[in-house]
Length: 393
Image 1 (tube, rainbow, N blue to C red):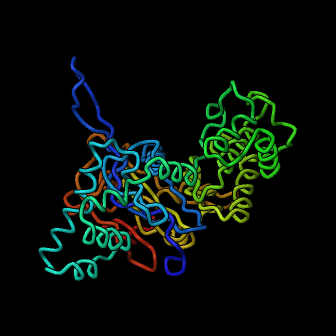
Image 2 (cartoon, one colour):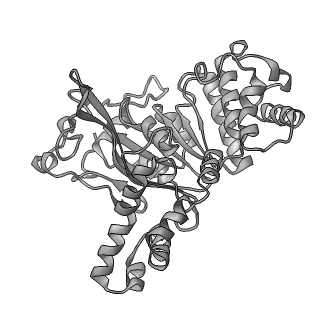
Image 3 (cartoon, rainbow, N blue to C red):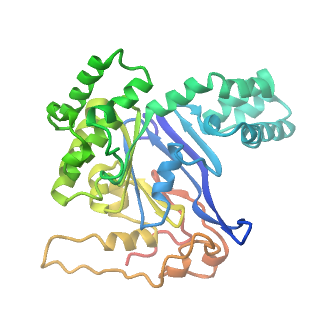
């Protein structure tokens, strides 16, 4: 997929830490390392699934990508544009540009002596793009490239990056009618001229998500959970986005309704050429809808692969354990369930080395001392384990 598909979203070394405050003066005494140094790419038109147990950082990753939360560090590139500094306060912008680009480019220039050699030796296309600007126009030119027309760039980002929230009950304003909920973004981004055009657009969106256009003047409390989630999907579709983060979009729904919503998401993806980051607990749902799957544990991506490879041949012991928990609807089939020992460690004080080693069935001394990097072992199959593939349950 990486050879012939355009990269829509690129996440590099993303971290999100939440401060823990204590004492009379509420000083920061520790940090919750919710997302800790993860990198991945999402290709145009694909669905990437993010799975893992509660508290592993899936939803925080989605919220940070959408800039509902500001990252502690790292880079978020959308459609070949570094969007990371767009929502930073001015005091943090200069620090980000210096640390991410300027200092590194100057260091490489001292090493290679020639600006052309620096650009040639950069592996990342985004780095090459910004290196050319920096060497041609200096820091001010790079700053101007990234932050000129800031309000327009922020609007462009918000329009193209949308979310379907987990809870269909709390994510809709109970005081607004459905027309107002869906049309709000249309007016904000100037996509409709007047109220009549907005009404027609909302009716069309409701029809696309399987709801009657007659419902536009109803309030959220007049709908069932599945219907509310369809309203949430219509709201996300209203701006014709490029990427939608589905944050456990079907977890709060009945199983029969889940299948309807998942099929709807697939139909809409084909019709509007959408790209999804699909966050879920249910591995069966992820297997059905995703093209690739990333498995997270305690703020880290431990395995990332095509869904067929991942489910047929999981290489990380944690992924193997997760797979053993998938129920099989056959009373005659006896499946061995892998029960992990202990509890998930605290993200405030994660274990040294591999974060899974206190619960890993095949952990050795090196696992507690050295953190394994996420490396590609097979075609597109990445795993972070010193003994990948050695545990089969």
